[in-house]
Image (cartoon, rainbow, N blue to C red; front, top):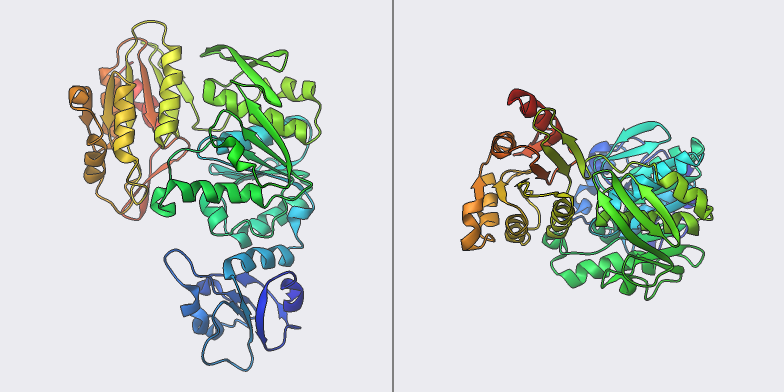
Amino acid sequence: MKTLRDILYNVSILAVHGNTDITINALTTDSRSIGAGDAFIAVKGVHVDGHIYIEKAIGLGAVAVICETLPEQLSENVCYIQVSNSANSTGIMAGNFYDNPSHKIQLVGVTGTNGKTTIATLLFRLFTKLGYHCGLLSTVQNQIGDTVIPATHTTPDPISLNALLAQMVDDGCLYVFMEVSSHAIHQQRIAGLKFAGGIFSNITHDHLDYHKTFDEYIRVKKSFFDNLPAGAFAITNLDDKRGTVMLQNTKAKKATYSLRTLADFKGKILENNLTGLVMLVGDTEVHFRLIGEFNAYNLLAVYGAAVLLGIDKAKVLQALSDTQGAEGRFDYIISDKEQIIAIVDYAHTPDALKNVLATIKNLRKGNEQVITVVGCGGDRDTTKRPIMGDVAVENSDRVILTSDNPRSEDPVAIIHEMEAGVPVHLKRKVISITDRKEAIKTALSLANREDIILVAGKGHEKYQEIKGVKHHFDDKEVLLEMMKLMDK
């Protein structure tokens, strides 16, 4: 518990009505979770404006209200704080409430369209292997040392985020690695956090349902680096054409990584096959367990960040060479009888799908078929659906279009939008099957000995979301079940 006055430190306040020397039990932006003695922060969200719930929050026991627009009628026993930006204030207040945990750890943020989860997870596993107690905040899971905490968002809300960081500090974590999504940056969920470093992976068309334009999406990503402090580092992918743009206005120490041009952290792929990557990192030859050019970039980003955090280069490479990536990222199994390779990957953007299929192409030894099972999520960026269909069919021998997480949308309608991107002369390659389990079964039935199946889009997810309900569904589990059933 803290006084409201202390919690408001560094918040941009426009007006105060009431006594700020009151004790606050908890902070919340959700009026449904208000308890006696809590402070309610009214945030204008994407779908709902928290200001309409101010009276409800007071009725449930809120003793303080933080808002951008004051209500017409003010209650005598409530302290009202008018602020210029409620979302930004939430992050700062949450930091103050939990004793600013981000100031007590080395917090590293990873942003970009693809690779965030792998980079953050690799950093967590690398530093753990090096003997440090670490925290992880990722799409797949949150983790404090060996304790796993299920993740619901790529980046949690500011209050949950600071509570988690405080837990990590209390548990003795020295380093925390977190994914920073464009939604989180735009919604100011990371406001008030102190970052020791920021990593940029790449940027491709995604989330245009939210950001509306690609330029706005780039601007939001860039703002993360613009706000890094002078004592932090900022490392970018020099081979991405917007890599240098990200660091233009940052006060942080700038660094670069690349496979194709001179950079602070330079790599070169020597071998790329199912046993992993052999790379030159600087002038050192290293064998890594991860596969594919996209993972070569992820490894360079991790290596660069670790060195910038002060870890010895040789120790980093030695530990990183035996470190596994994140679940559901190029996760493969080989059937016992026919040696069919089935790959599960989270690729859900055109660029990610193209990268995975390019990697598979490099793994082919001869005339193996590549059969791709892919869908697109409902209630998300619709502009990428025809592109996903086109990328899949241009880079595969057979394609099965199916459901991903249709959410509130009709899965058949989503598939039709993907079909629209398939060139007329390639339509014969495509089968559309709404039922994802049937789609995976069909892919296996079409596969001959040593063929390669890619099941893309869901990766680590263990569910399908249909009409607001999450049903258990695990791509890898279904593949294993069907391989056994079909005696493959």
